[in-house]
Image 1: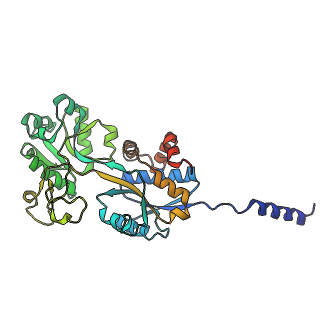
Image 2: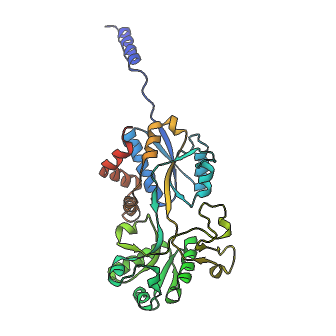
Length: 338
């Protein structure tokens, strides 16, 4: 057979085969905390291994990522860990009806919690269940520092709004006089928690989920009155504003007498945390868009992933790949029918 005939035959075969489908591509915005990074790499692993897509990452501050995704032009396609009510302003602008509606949320957000935590053995053996118990001197004594001295309440890193809020709550729940209010960076708090568990002593601290400590230690959140709305003037217009609510916070940046002028006697509001994707994926990458709508993050699994990355020093991509391989039924549900 001549070379000309062979080439003609190859051309004919190619014409019957048709063009190969181009891989669907997405850009995931990289947010700079471990929980978001863990979700980012799980999403990327599923898109690559189960949907034959192509993924790249873009790291930037969250307002920049929001603006890029809202342009709906492919510069940023996915925001993996968006908290409400923390991002209520951006949500109203880009997601909610009445806004541009250029970003689409997954249908099942996960719930993130904040509060005051103690070891389970303290809660169970001494009946410490509520913030009201901390007013009792004999309960406060359970949280004395290992070397002696006044009991400590670890309120979190300096400058965090939650740190100031925790101090206000200690005042208004009435247990502040029993404790030294101690501001600690995360690493110092983790070290104190570890030391307490090893010695079976008490530790009282502000914490939030997701975080690796909830995979490593048996912790209990203390009961507080339910959140019933923000009462401060700067929350007018917020869906959770309630002039009669138990939450009135005055920031130290607004008033030097912030501690006395603030009054908070309710739990932190739980956050609902979403995966957002740009609307253009609905037509440009429909299988990936459907997956991103279906994805449902388990907070307990996220705690474990954060532990792998932060404490066990596993590379995020490797930790996510191992998780996806070990949780096939969960991933199957995310991509069912795609």
